[in-house]
Image 1 (cartoon, rainbow, N blue to C red):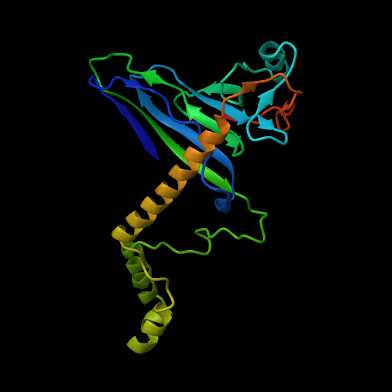
Image 2 (spheres, one colour; image 1 turned 60 degrees about the vertical axis):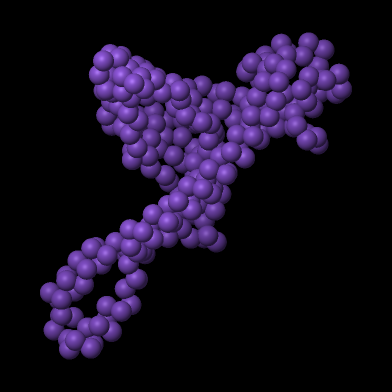
Length: 241
């Protein structure tokens, strides 16, 4: 869950960075974003793009007689000297009570928005959820189906629940043998540390991804070397009102 808050002192949101959710080892195949509440903000959109890839060279180059115009028409995207080597594939308005679900192969970003009434606060609230690949037998993703709650309070509740079953009638020593196999709880400090490590890891990946997908296009007089991976395939993006 996330909330973007605007105030009279900071009335504008400049937009989010282009990014793909998470890393490859997390096996996320689709992303969903539910816009469940907003107040006093102008309309905004969720934009999508994909990288234009080069063949056999370090950095995309274009060699064609009419250069920018022809390449722009071919890939249905504006291509100019030093512009990012990416193809924008559209955007979807983000309205209250709208859920947007899309495959996790496209970079996306939140478009800018601002306060409607600059004398009052405003906000947008979202719930993001991720679908992991359920068919990956080699890399099983741990889920709540196999991992119980790890908060200390939750584990204490599980032990108290067991005390009300037949296991609770066992001698103390035997009952402790049953409960000792429960995973050790994770403190708030440990959880915060893991969160910081993941955030740092994803930040580095995001910066690298932006550098790759934002590489400048070079117009040269050599052979035509630019192509877009599967560029004829349209994005399958589902929007639920």
